[in-house]
Length: 237
Image 1 (cartoon, rainbow, N blue to C red):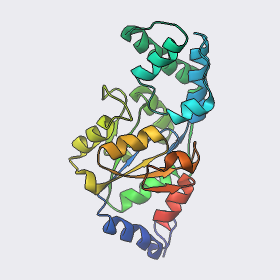
Image 2 (tube, rainbow, N blue to C red; image 1 turned 180 degrees about the vertical axis):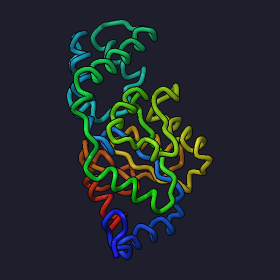
Image 3 (cartoon, rainbow, N blue to C red; image 1 turned 90 degrees about the horizontal axis):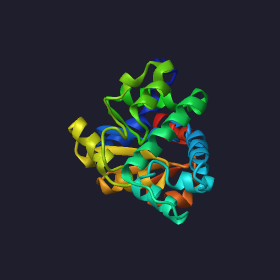
């Protein structure tokens, strides 16, 4: 007899063994490029914004710095063009990028096909789930609104909750604090170097999906999967 997700219960044994062997109690997911097919639109919004200031960046640059367009990165981009920028102007840059993404690209963003099956599979296993993203909460809520499933996550940490973003450990440390969990009991799923560095700096095991960058960029992770589907198959089949 199959379970409510259409799987033979015997096929869940791999997921159970993996969780037991690693003593996993919680899974912390990055959002953009992991659960949500959105990175191309973030890339376009950043390029569009920075071009207004005469700053040209490559797609590769955005993907490599996903979730890590911190103050120092913005300052360096402006200084290389001989432009000065203060902290208030940097906050305005973030607001502008958020606005461009929301107004021009948000409607095109979709969850990956495997997303809900994967998180529901983990929930059935009794694991805690966290969403740890460098996006702001207003975008998170709108992206997931049609699916009415943000309540599947036991905690959500966004750029609004920390002052130091990835690759600093702060976002994942905040998630651990909110879940009242120790690092050794948690697994992170990321897709970018900054996110992997953030997770490892917080003392967490990190699996990576090569959804936006090829495996050589993800070598700091503990295991690499070619896609979210491959990760879902690994745990749920």
